[in-house]
Amino acid sequence: MSLDKPENFIEYIYGRVKTRPYYVLIPISIVLLFYRLQYPAMWGDEFYTLKVIRFTIPELVETLRGDYHPPLYFILTKWWCSLFGFTDIGMRSLSSLFGLLGIVVSLIIYRRYYTELSYWFISFLIVIHPTLVLYFRMGRYYSMLYLLSSISYLFLFEILKTGRKTGWFTYALYAFFSIMLLYTSNMGWFVLFSQVLWMLFIDKPGKKKPVIVTFAVIGVAYLPWLGTLLKQIGMSRGALPYDFASNSLLDILSKALYPLYSFTISETIYPWTYYLVIPLVIILLWRFGRLLYSSEKRKWLFTFFITIIIPVFMLLVVSELLLQRLSFIFFPARLIFFVLFVPPLIAGLLDNLPAYFKRFSLIFIVFIFLYASYNYFFSYKMINPGFNLPMREAAEDFREETDGQQLIITNIYQPFYYFGEDNTYYDFHWMLRDFSGKDFPASMWFLMKSTGQIDFKAQTDVFIDSLVNSGAYAKTFENGYSRFDDKTLEWFQKALGKKLYPYRLSLINIKNRL
Image (cartoon, rainbow, N blue to C red; front, side):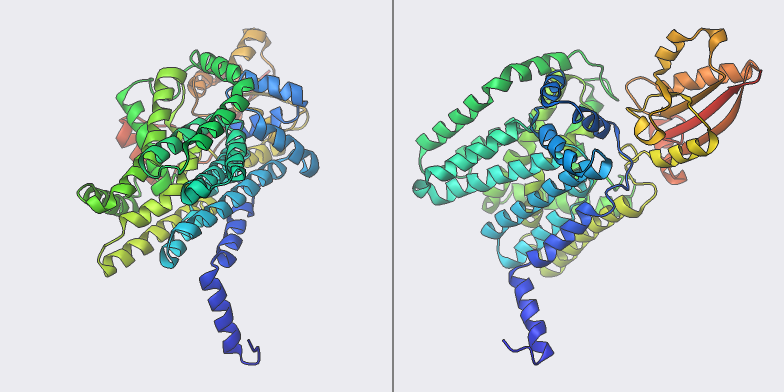
């Protein structure tokens, strides 16, 4: 190739990008996963991660035995943060790295099984997928769950593709990464169950004995943690339910539909953005209905049910019958492994459409994903404010208004990361227990998240109003953060038939008048 003529060089670059699109896709993924990692304020589970990884390894493992997590992610995060800092960026950077590697594995899988045009489309969708951007940047195990499940599928597909020619080394790699998956998340069992169904109903392995031996090895390797898993399940049954009453119709429907909505439209686009949501839902449902009457798409339907519907159903059963405490809002994070199959299934839905309508649908879906990612990075409302409470803004106001150590009554988990370790932090009920009516401190700060298992916000509002109305205290500071916009608030109030408090986070100070 000669570089004398610029057009030759441009043609060369175009040809390389066309045949190797990862030259463009991977840099895009790097930007999306590492850009402004400190932007969202950390949420409760991230604070939990930051707390646990400061323990010694034995303390860490013992703590997790009393929770519902396997230990592998936390151990790796502890080692990583010991090098890069026990901070939001230090912790989240490992999650972003796992997410990036997961995207790379996804591209490898897609490249092996899809034509050039389909490969470009589905690869671009997985790179810009707004739900992956949302969860891969959190200091949690979600990106590692996606990465290991994708690697597990990569070697499974290699076993199925090579058939009787598959060497034991491939089985060993599949077993190794599947074991890591199980020690990263209990959802790994759902992945393995879906893979067994895949081998039974879609592609059968060439040799059964190596498969049986491989799964036996995986089971034996998990035995040291099996007792802990059973104990964790038993402990979770006694926990308080979230949001809706367990086993209610609304609870069940929310849990079943929310991850499907999240992974095909995005959590950062609310349903009341009807001018975007309704057209996309109509397109997908219409095409899905057509597939039900098409014998040509039998494998597509099997893939849809085995990789998506079965995991949703299993988590729904576990949530309702065993845990009895898992809110629908947690479903997408725990089922994130099946996003690997969402872009190919969307592409399959749009096959055999008239060219003009197919082109419109492809462009519209890409636009939806780009718009959802834009909301994540640049919208103040941050369309899912429960994940991004603006703690930094509240902490800045707090520092401007205070001088010295303060008493903070809060339902926020570990707020000292932003508000400082010198202050005294109290749960509302502990504060009532430790102080009598006449001995309340001269100054009390209330940092309140308006959602939770117990209506902390309503109880503290009554308490604050009683002190202020009695004349003993004066309210000297009050502000709300992450306010719903008026349209959203109005929609919520009409849908629920009641007035809502318009803030997700409040900071209030009252001082004794004496």
